[in-house]
Length: 324
Picture 1 (cartoon, rainbow, N blue to C red):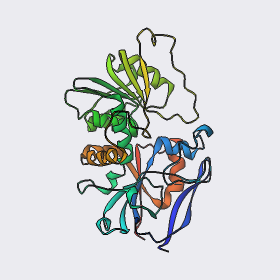
Picture 2 (spheres, rainbow, N blue to C red; picture 1 turned 30 degrees about the vertical axis):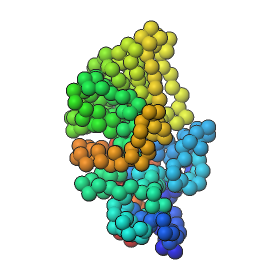
Picture 3 (cartoon, rainbow, N blue to C red; picture 1 turned 180 degrees about the vertical axis):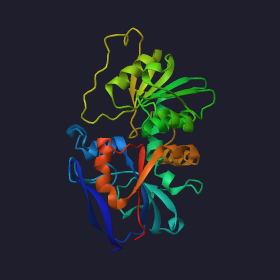
Picture 4 (cartoon, rainbow, N blue to C red; picture 1 turned 60 degrees about the vertical axis):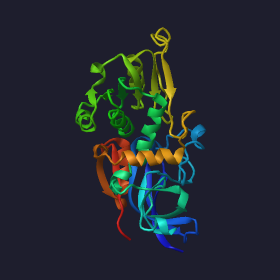
């Protein structure tokens, strides 16, 4: 055995705990990783934490290295950065990203880790999974030079979309959110900002990421005739109401879903290349704006209920791990 580890488990909806884990010695084609940082994906993980994953979606919502089953007990998470302590020579000592839950040490196939570029700080690399989702959304949206783009919902995913889109030459990007304080975030990532009632309409593309009916309705209002709203929100078991009986048909609008589990047909890049691209984009320090807090691993059982309730406001909340 390679020794004991500690992992965060959802014991029951709304209650988490840290449990001991046995970590075996890695095989020839595996790596032992010591975790440096994990990130809490506030939208998806708090949906899991509160037990709001619809039963019909249990198979699709499984994380790659999840243990247990929904609704609980379950070990869930997918934003993990660590250092390889055992494994193939070319990976020893490397900082790597893995889609692994909150755990101090773990063993996975060597093919399941991606080396973090030297220019990307390990804590910023935690954002790779979210930036990968944003890359996928923009592949689905297919923006062109000169487009007017609105991103409705200035959370972790929406801000990532806006940060990437703002780097496209000639594109106008406006981040839209009910929280006027998000204007500072928009400025840091190079995007404009507006509250919903002041947002500019006539957009070529609107990416919706607020996970609210009001946000999706406003997205449909902002998009130009015959244009597309890319729906990136994960609603869990919430019901969504939108005005499809008003201007939706007369303006020939399209609502297109985007989900990181699938790549738009015609793309010649696979999942590994998409993740590598996300990590490469994270060389840009602008993404530091998305890390809005951090806590030690031992406090995660107390931190998760606060994130789920909204009393701890965050985009990406970073979890730091001790050397052990």
